[in-house]
Length: 424
Ligand SMILES: Cc1cc2nc3c(=O)[nH]c(=O)nc-3n(C[C@H](O)[C@H](O)[C@H](O)COP(=O)(O)OP(=O)(O)OC[C@H]3O[C@@H](n4cnc5c(N)ncnc54)[C@H](O)[C@@H]3O)c2cc1C
Image (cartoon, rainbow, N blue to C red; front, top):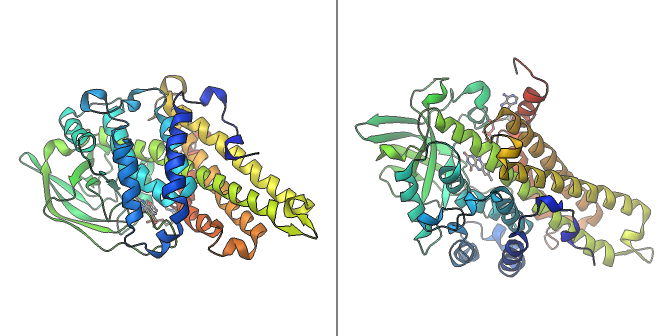
């Protein structure tokens, strides 16, 4: 019987631990999430099932120790040359059940661990040790949040090649050996429940000098951190987003992630590497789930006495959907491998990788939205009702296309490199 595992994984892209990782995460997700995912929308303000899932995945299985180096109590997967693929596989498996949960996971442990610990730039050992202890020694899930978007918009801050942080309003001022943070962020993933914020600040408002962008870690319990009520969104209910205010919040000077200039590189990598890797894994996970739902439906539902899938017109749409999933999956796996092997594909920080990552996100997000919509065409009213979960994936995945500067920034980044644009 054909399953989602029949979408092609090129043999040379298959991680040695991939089958084991898939098995562990899929069995947890099938037991803990699949039967209950509809309740995430109804009980969106607080759902104890999500907390219980985090406890099992982050702590019992140990996902929050996954990336850290062994000397800090971690499993050192971050130091292997399969890091992109391993992270991709886990996120895709979670997204198959719920993309909101997958982004909460990806941002919750992925970005802070991955970036601080393993990118080949100046290692901030003191901060690294402090944060790694937070993750590896805790018996509770530790949730992080990357706070970038501000009331005036998110895209301009993400448009680093043109704006260079010019529009950031949240300030970080050095006072003795402490940073003082003031500002207002909104929409970040996990913002309503994070333990740790990575705050994108400027040390000089209006500056276009990359050295003035600062990424500063702020524990949520610091005096002056205030957060609002979670937003009621169209989808992705498992990710709780809200406003956060920083009012004269003080943190030690070594809470700046990497330092002048390097923080900008770190921030860009957050978007172009882990941000894109996450986005495409969520899309492919959702598409594979749509395939599962669709396959069952067109095999059972009959039209003029024959299964729906035996109808020419329907088979045409099914094959179109399948081709989109197969192509998106291959592209996504290729990008994961590019993250694994900067020695072969070039530095994470290059404009080439940025353009290729954005091209991948552009393509995969577009196909994902089409696949959900075409599947709904086939299921008709049963696609639009809440019983088959097509409408859930359809509502949830749109956001993946909108975040990280939306389609437009992806298009600009892609064209800028491939066509050597000079003014774009
Ligand atoms: C579920 C969810 C999770 C999120 N997670 C995070 C997170 O973890 N951290 C975080 O900081 N934020 C997060 N966000 C916010 C998200 O990153 C922003 O929505 C995104 O940056 C886009 O910004 P904006 O919505 O303010 O649109 P705007 O910046 O106001 O842009 C509006 C429109 O203008 C277009 N546009 C912008 N610039 C240009 C240009 N130069 N040329 C042409 N068109 C342009 C955009 O594509 C868009 O269509 C999240 C949002 C959601 C809903």
